[in-house]
Image (tube, rainbow, N blue to C red; front, side, top):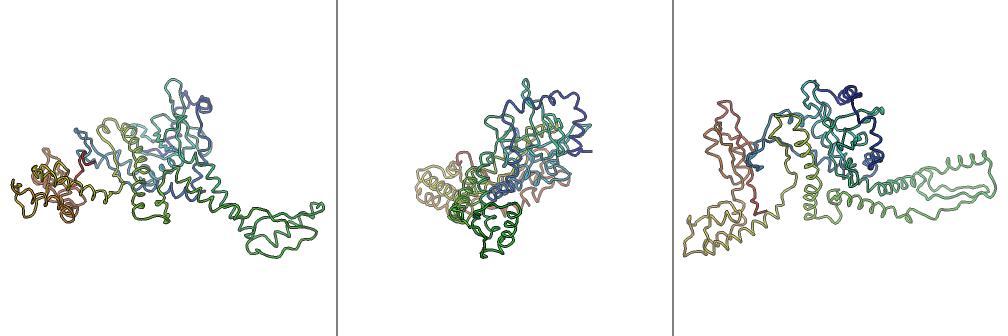
Length: 493
C-alpha cells in the first residue's frame, strides 16, 4: 500500500534518525555558507496581496496545468517523430494521478505557483516499502524544505519542517527539486518576487492607504490642536466623541464642533500622493520582472489583434515552455530512473502549447512558391523543385506530368499560382504506420498516404490514431498507426 506524505516522512524519520549523519550539522552549513531561504514564506504569501502578481502567477500556472503529457519509447533513430507512444506504464499512471488528493492538473498548478513565486518547486516521492517503487508524488512548500550541504559529496540530503515544527530527514532519492538556479547559492532557487518585494510592498501599502482614506470619511487626515494640556479622562472623552460623530463613510462631511481646539489639515492629499500613477508603475515593474506580455493580463488599452496574438505566442514560448521543459527533465532524469529497467528507453514529453503563427506560415508558403516558380522556369524538374523548397507533391490541373522543354512559362505560371485555394488543397497530413511483424496488410498499404486536411485524415484515423480498416484487432493486436501534420524540414525552419 502506498504511504501518504505524512506516513512516508514519519517512517523515514524514525528509520533513519540514528544513522543519518547530516541531521546534526544541518544548521551549520545552511546558515553560514550560502544565502538562506529567509523570506520564502513572504514570497509565497505575496500572491494574495497584489492583484497584478496574482493574475500573472495564476494565468501562468493554469496554462502549464492545461498542457497534455504523453509517455514515449525512444526511437533508435533518435527522432521525435519515430517514437512510439506508451499508453500503459506505472510511471504514466503516477503522473496522471500523483496522489489521492491531487489530480495531475492540480499537482502541476501547485508546483508552477511555487516556481513562479520562489524559483523553487519541490516534490517528495513516497515509495513502496517492500519493492522500493514510487507510488505517490507530493508537492511541498519551498519554505519547509532545506538542502543539507556536505563538504565531500556536495549534498547529504534534505530536511523537511512540518507544520508542527518537527524536522524530518529525507534522502536525496526521496526528493525531486526543480529550480531557477540562484547566482550565489547552488542549493536554492531564485524567482522574480525576490527582486519585487519592495515594489510589492509599495503597491500593497498604496491600496491600504486608499482603503483607509475612505474609511476615514473620504477626507484627508488632520490634527486637532489643543492649547492646554489634557488629562487622560479629557483625552479619551475627546477621542470617543470625535470617532462617534465623524468616523466612517456614513459620517462624511459632518460639521465638527471643537471646544478649545483647532483643526489643522495635513498637507498631503490623495492627489498629491499620486497613487494612481504609483499603482500603474507597480504593475509595469511586476510585468517587467516576469517578462509577462501586457495583453495576457487582460489589459485592453493600446492592444490590437496583431500584438495580442504576438503576446500569446510570446507567453507560451518564453514563459510556459521553459517551465514545462524543466518539469520534463525532472520526470525523465529523476522519476523514470526510479523504475529501474522498466523505465529505460522511455521519456515523457508534452504537447507544445505555442499556437501556430498562421500569418507567418502564409508568408513562408508565398516565398516557397515564388522560389519554386523561379527554379521551374530555369529548367529544373518540378517534382524535385517542390521537395527542395519544402512544398508537398501537388498535381497541377490541366498540365502534363512532366514539364515540356518548350513550355517553361506554363509550368512557371502554375507553380507561381500556388496560393489561395491551391495552397489550401496542399497535402498537409500523413499516415504513419509502425511496420513490423504485427502490422496488418491494411495498415502497411496505407502507410505514407497523404491527406488534404485534418477532417479527411481523422475520418480514417479517429482522434488521430488507429486506422479504421486495421485488422490487427482480430488477432489481439492494437493498431499503432497514427496520422499527423507533416513536419517542416530543417531547411524550412
